[in-house]
Amino acid sequence: MYRRQVRRRRAVLVLLVVACLVLISTHFSEGESGPLHSAQNGIGSVLSPLEDGANQALKPFRDLVNWFDETFAARGENEDLRAEVQDLRLQLTEAEEELAAGLERGKIAKIADADPLAAYTVVDASVSARSASTWNQIMRIDKGSSDGVAVDDAVVDGDGLVGRVSAVDGGSARVTLLSDQESSVTAKVLEGGPLGVVGPVVGDPKDLLLGLIQGDDEVKPGAGVITAGIDDPSLPSRYPAGIPIGEARESQVGEQELRQQVHITPYADLTNLDSVAVLTGGPS
Image 1 (cartoon, rainbow, N blue to C red):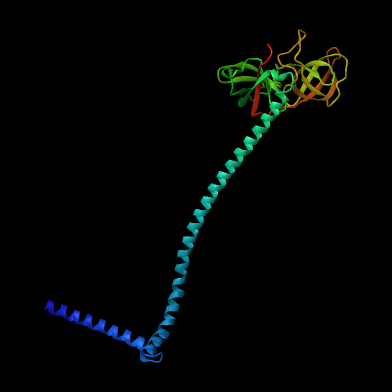
Image 2 (cartoon, rainbow, N blue to C red):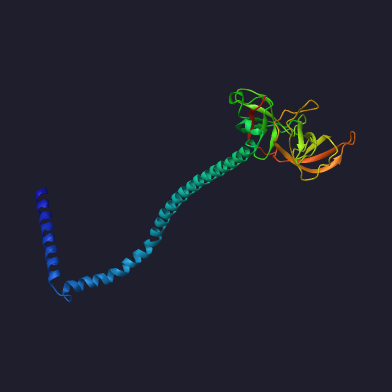
């Protein structure tokens, strides 16, 4: 029984193959107006609306699939672009910092190369910490005795005097700023002006006071003030001569002995210091 069914199925399959071959051969051999072409056209005209309807019905699903594909592709492109923008922003920031550091080093070199500071060795340093007190204006730098830094070395930035080294260890140092309550600098006014001592106006790091002035010469607004670097016992100096300090802003009569006092705007921004330089060595 089973073998008879197998033979019957094989016979049917052979007949179908033969019929297909006959139809294909007849289709290619007959003209455009033949019965097979007419039947094909008729079936096509009947099924064409069904095909169009199926396409219209399936179009939302195809559009949905395409939307997901395009969305995921766009999201991947956005993530790549975002990462690229972050990399470019980081590179730009590093380039700007490097440029600013280079300009600052150039300004410091210009100060240090002038006489009589050319005899000193410049040690570049970064500010690692700073006191928030308005009375104790100190900061810490990342260079110390192992770099040649010593107590009382002058500290400058690209604009002028910042302060002096007041304590040092192997890898760092403490700097007392000009605006600290215990700071004092022997100074002189440029173009033959008088000598005096520059001290802080406590609580205002953007204002210094030139007092104890020797001589009766009036200090005019706009006059430059630099470190004196003299070895006079009455006006001892820890700083080498010739470091720019600031610019005279206004004068007033002092309370003691009616001596002149001059408010000075420091050249260095003592409230915003990132990189400085220590002037080490030099004449004993």
